[in-house]
Every structure is written in structure tokens, then in C-alpha cells.
Length: 451
Ligand SMILES: Cc1ncc(COP(=O)(O)O)c(C=O)c1O
Image (cartoon, rainbow, N blue to C red):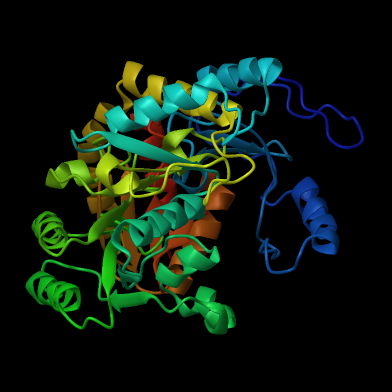
């Protein structure tokens, strides 16, 4: 996990010369963002679309290297990353096994011809995903690059399989921002500028909670049973909403939805792009409910940092796609990218060999204890926390409290992000390799950062 490369900045000056072990504690040498980060932010603003990177006096830092649960910025500040960089670095930043797989594969065959002349690794990864994902049925895989790709592959599969375009989705959902994914993503912020260009095939219901579960099931059934004009073919749900604020669908609700979808011939799509690959202490969040969705979308932690995603589904559903006649109906240039497949296979092997899914489950007791302490010490600004495994949300009194906590944590050497439809939740989704000591220190510093 060690990284002791000498990094040079743009003028060739050696900066980061010490070792980064991955199990390090924060070390702040200059208040973040330091001078190099600030200079880069200024340069970036001149060349990048202004809507992308948020730039303020206290944000962002520019990252130079990572190892395990650590990130280091271009000014030499070392952080504990409790975000796993958007819940991606499941087996740790720049995990040596993943890096070796990527560089080994890149040296042999960097890119192949996804839907024409693929690499053999596509077979190996597809076989692995079919075996790992919930359900014993025979399965098939459709690869993509981003999470939104996987969601759009699932939406198209459901439309092809059922010939019914309507899709039930949920408030607070985040499924990505491509036009197909955006149609089922909730949040005006993302949708309003493009409302006139969205497909209009979604039917949005409140996200289920323990208190509204039976009402929610009745609404789902009404939509599935109802109006022929609506013609609902699928229901897409995050078993645990990630960006929506770490909200968990009740397990009984998931089981009932599974039954309803089967009864009405609708396709159940589980979006596990955030929650998959061990994050909740099981390989997939659906495993807690013991259900097998018809289609499951995976990405993020699947390859721990290389962009690759997949929609994995029951063969009888997937096989409603016609056999390719040489011109695939749904494909893309980088589909089944050999280097991405190598990264995913290495990341999955690492999860398995180092028992990191079990590690995420066993970390739950400590995180719970630490967050209980945090809540007790901040009764005004923090109202509670929720989560499982290594996927947690700390509910703040307001977006301002969460934003101040996150910038305060950065100054103290902890990288965390806000989430929730009102941005009033602090997300904790660290690499699964994070140590107990790093968890204690990071949550302690987060507590210090909450006013
Ligand atoms: C549950 C879920 N689905 C889909 C996506 C979209 O993934 P991407 O940003 O890779 O397109 C995300 C991203 O945060 C996600 O959390």
C-alpha cells in the first residue's frame, strides 16, 4: 500500500518525498487549500467549464497521490479520506494489486474492440459478476463505463424485455445524469435545465421508510396494476440511497416490491452503484433483504478507481435483446475495456482475499459507537445518524452545518462530503481498508469541525 514516488510539480520541484502508507493519520503542513492548490484552482477556472469544479477561498485541494485510506494534496497535506473519493476506492486508493493489474494489462493490450473483437478479460469479469451478484439464476452482463451507463443499460433492457416504457422511481434517487438516468434521478437542480428534453417515462413515488412502507407498497401496486396508458415495465430503486442522504429502504418493503414486480411482470432494477461490492457489509445491499433483483447496476467500487460499470441481469430478461447481427443496438467504444476488466478482477480478488466485506460489517460496531458519541457532543447541530457497514450518513440541522463541518474537516486533515437532497447530511463511505485508528481520528476531527 506504500507510495514513496517522488512527485514533481509543474516546474520540476520535488515535493512529496516521504512515504504514504495508507494507514497514516492526518498531517497538515499548510492550511488547505495551500498555495499550490490555490494556484491550480485559478488556472483551472480559466480553462474548465465554470459549472464543474466548485472553487472558493476554502475549497478545493488538488490531489497528488493516494494510498489505502489516505490522500495527499499538492501542498503535501495528508488526509484520511472518509469518502473513498465518491465511494469508489473500495480496496483503497492506488491499491497495489489493482495498480499492477492495470499497468500489466495496459502494457499488453490497453484497449480492445468491445462488441466486435473483445479481450478475454471481458469473459472472466462477466463470469465473475454473474456469480457474485444476488440470485442463482443464469445471468448475462452488459458493460459500461460510468454508473449512468449501467442505469441506462438497465432501463433499455427493461423496455426491450417488457415492451412497457413506464418506470417507477423514487424521490431522493440519484442514478446519474445522462438523459436516460436523469429521467429517473430526482432533484430539480439536475433536472430543471433539461426538463423539456427528458423522456417523461418516469413515475416518482416517495422513498420508502418504516413509517410509510405500507402506503408506499399500495402506491407501487396501484401503478403496476393500473392504467394501461401508463404501461409500467420496471421499478428502479437504490436499496440504500447514497447521494440522497444514506437512506435505507426497509428490508420487508424490498421483499414486498420483489413480489409485486414478479406478480405484475415488471422488472426490478436495483441500483447498487454506490452500495455494491461490500460497502454495506454484504457483497450487495440486496443481500440484507435476501432478494435477487432482475437487473442490478454496479460501478464505482467494482474496480476501485478505474471507470467501468455493468448491468447484470437474469438471462431470461437479458435474452429479450435480439442476438447481435453485427450491429449492436446498445454499445459503446470502451465497452468491456480490458484494462478496466483487469482492474475490476483485481479489486474483486482483493475484496475476497482480504475479507474486506467482512471488515466493512465488523467496522459497524465501532462506527456506531463513534457516531453516538458525536451526536451526544453536538445535540444542537446533529440530530442523528444512519447506515450499515461502511456506508453512513450524519444528519445535520442544516446544509450550512454540514458544509462548515466538511470544510472544517478538510482543514483538520479529513476528506468528507455532504450528501442528501438538502445537502444537510455528512456522508461517510471510507475505503473498506480504513483502520480502526483512522476511523477514530477521522470521526473525532469531524466532531471538532461541527460548530
Ligand atoms: C446509486 C448511484 N447510481 C448511479 C450513479 C451515477 O454514477 P456515475 O456518476 O458514475 O455516472 C451514482 C453516482 O453517484 C450513484 O450513487
